[in-house]
Length: 150
Image (cartoon, rainbow, N blue to C red; front, side, top):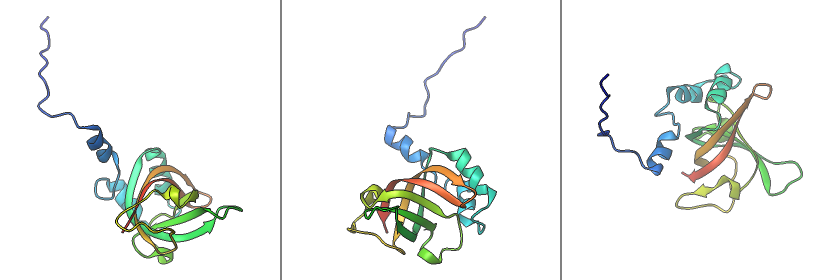
């Protein structure tokens, strides 16, 4: 019985930073996510399928705040509805993403000019962890990883 020869890989092992960057799902590197961002039916089953298949993974997209409301009786914690693109409350394409019970610091704002506060219509590069899709509310829940001002 001949022993299998093992040759060292010519491909270098990616660094932790490169691996982390490779794991972020964007519309440019994931056709399913690209299609999801273009759907006009916010209750489409594609939302549920994507959330189930990618739960715990990180997505990134350009979007804006479509709606913002205080969370419960809190004056410093909010529920944010996010839409893809730059239309804020006039967003009509793509899922309705939600950050629930988050304060401004919890958005983890980055960029050249970090505002003291945010509001409806503000544009960002959202990087978030996929949580779940609530089919009754037609809301796609995400958790913020970072929010870059654009």
